[in-house]
Image (cartoon, rainbow, N blue to C red; front, top):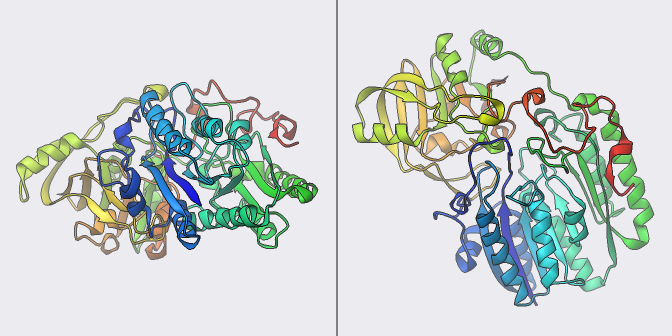
Length: 505
């Protein structure tokens, strides 16, 4: 038995000004770009990834593994066509050699030049060289967006049930349980699905709480009890200006139980639609949030700038929140990482112990939103320089190596600032502890994130304050110039209804 494995992940924010090149797909590879073959396999083994679950199954079956590519990028702007073509060609070439199953660890919200549904296009090409009955297995991020092409060319689809995503290995394992039954019991399966016209807010999506919790719980219960083979609810990624955005439900079932699967699909979609108002996040002014934080007596207080989060395609150099923190006189603060390669270079040349004034951040304009980069002038002392490399020890992507690039720690009037060559959402405390600094020794921890920070920071936080800073990850959907969404869609269009849904109706 032979399987082809590939990990290709990118969440595309089409409003982000940061182009996604082939070299961008370097997260977890310890190289300048993707990893291939045995190197990719070794990097994925024993990590919290769906690919690791695939590898474990292959080992248990004594199956031959061809690991085509490990291409994982920090979320950013549209993927360049050349990068997509290289990645797709690499996967297709591996499949074309012949295999008994194709096992894909994908994101589900990648947009490439010319391909608004990049994963759907990848699966179409795979099917052209590996037609049914070869199983094509796909594990997807909770924020996947669905088109008919992605569904039509897959045999099995499973999605993360958590946000922060701490069940990625388990997602692959769920897919593998179904694959084993298809291979050894010769099950005949089908997929039923629906995408609702709901542009949900990412701060309201998490299955850890309502309105999503009991929708996800119901899906997981149906899967656990064997009513269906797999049941997944996807919050969708709303910051993509493409036609197939929205909350989706995808169910894999035995064909003989298709009616039960369709009934479950209806129930889950009806629950989600009836709570559509609860998936809307109301934005609070930035200054008011900082004022509230200042009044809190005990820390650690986690200050979460969710408007400039590179985990959703933000540029990670918008300085508005840090500027307000300093303006209001908060001290005993640790902040970062802030993406500014130019500042890193200047500070490294100055060296540890040097005190100097720099223009920090604000190097990136965001023309889609009409925002200009505005640097913040900072005077501080360099207290550490690191290579930025660390291994994740927390529950999200456990075991993976990450790199911030060269990183400088700057001390400025009671604020310790981490400045890095590469953007990285801080979902693991390693972004700070690799430099020998315990973030929880500070009263305030200012990070650019949305939900993933909870994986590494929530359990040690006394308070959490969400801050609506400006940027291409804003929760104010009214500022985005959407042109390609399928309309009507809620809440942009109050007249949207379930009749505007797509999929199995």
